[in-house]
Image (cartoon, rainbow, N blue to C red):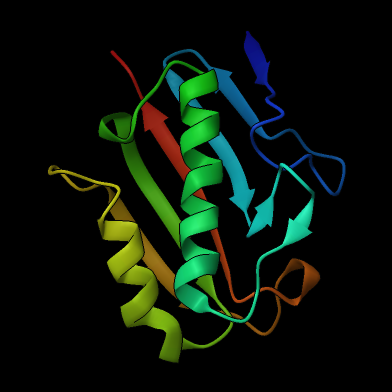
Length: 126
């Protein structure tokens, strides 16, 4: 059985997918981009601000599902350019205390709405 997670504290999906889905003890959060859900505006121009908005969106979905960053076991970071790696990594790392999740970071040819960063996560709760 699966449960669809939705919150107005994170951007609405821009396609046929859910913000997040719980399946058993697993939470899957769809790729988040730097859209401010309060005004549906894209944050752009500063990669650190973009990354922070992405992480805030993820935090809102984790909270809605009753999970925390401590429950995150896997993340995938998509970047428009690996030159953004250090700044995104700094923002990303500030959301975790210890026991960091597994992760990959890849540069891609394009992302939705031409953003510079998109992050998806998988969390587990026993």
